[in-house]
Image (cartoon, rainbow, N blue to C red; front, side, top):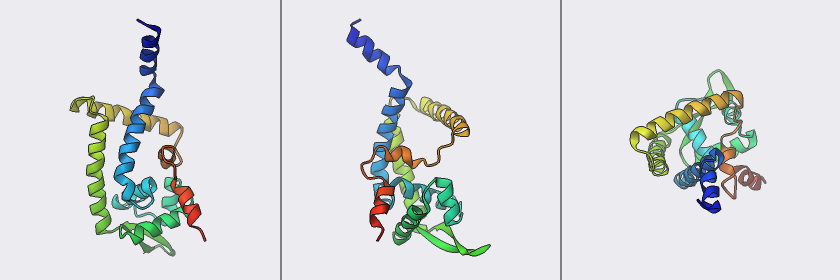
Length: 176
């Protein structure tokens, strides 16, 4: 075995290298799928929460997703303008607004989930279906444990590393 082949084999056995390759492929494919969602990955997260019925207040949702309140306001404005969510008065506090998915938002989420399933299938195509299910389960187990000990304040920060124009920068440019 040549020195070059040994270095190549060592690289391929490195967990960081493997995770990076898979993450880049998934982030690129998912980014293409959610590109039309206002706010990109953050908009998708808000829409996911709204469709799931996590009708939290605007502030609670911003805190849960680790999104700055100002950025959240712009993000919700864009999602509402696109007809994907609505802000409704909170029955417990009329000053607060709850985030609710519209019918169009639910239909969009259904379409996005189908497209994201295709991205996942393409990224995991080296595995047969039973292996894919096992991989997902094992990865979910590891991610859950890691998150318990070191919670990620904002899942989008990972995605932002793969884009040239993160949503936070876009929101700052839009301020008057």
